[in-house]
Each structure stands twice: as C-alpha cells, then as structure tokens.
Length: 129
Image 1 (cartoon, rainbow, N blue to C red):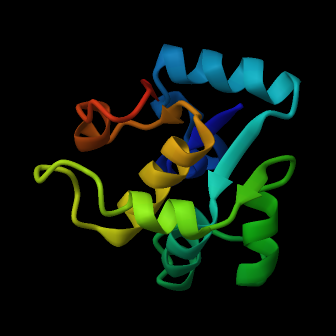
Image 2 (image 1 turned 45 degrees about the vertical axis):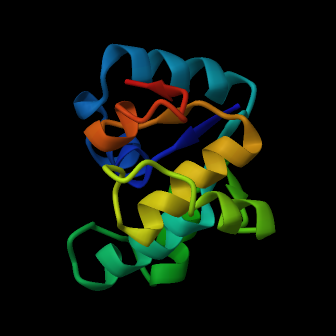
C-alpha cells in the first residue's frame, strides 16, 4: 500500500502528466490491487481547495470528494498519528496538514508519494517521487 500526498491525489485526477515516472509506476502497481490510501487530512485540504475554486469539482463538495477517493482507502487521525506529528526535524514543514500526512505514512509504515521537497528530504519518511 502507498499513501498519496494531497497534490498527488489532485494530479492523479486532473493532471496525471505532472506525476513522475516513479510515482506513476507506484500508483499503477498499487491501483491494480486497490492498495492506495490518503490521510483524512488530504480530504480536509481538498475540501478547502474545492470551496475556493482552486480545484475543479463536479456537483457538491461531498460528491467531488467522493470522486477523488473512489477505490482509495481514507486513513484516520488516531493517537499515534497525532503524537508522531511532534517528532519531525526542525526544518520539516510547520503546516499541520503536512505533518498529519507524513505522520500517517510513518504510523502505517507506508511509502509517501509526494513531490514536496521537505518530505522527500526527511530521513524519517520513505518516499516515492
């Protein structure tokens, strides 16, 4: 199973050409076995982007979110994820959503598919890009 960062989830739906070869390959392999996940934090970010018109939706925000996560597992924020958000290096993103997404990957032992340089450079994360 792999975990997608929010921008990767959006690009997968709307701009797949922006994905790296490695990301595209990992997603293709994981999709074949329905082993793709996102953090619930990505849905919160996506809802805000849909609401502001920065991402195109179809119908309501709820129906748009459902379309984005069709055949994708949504992972919750639990105590372990919440605690792990506090254990990133000082140069890691201060954005709470980035920390939740990264902590979810750590808690679940999943590679994170991301183009975010701060996440790619974090020694605590296994990443794909």
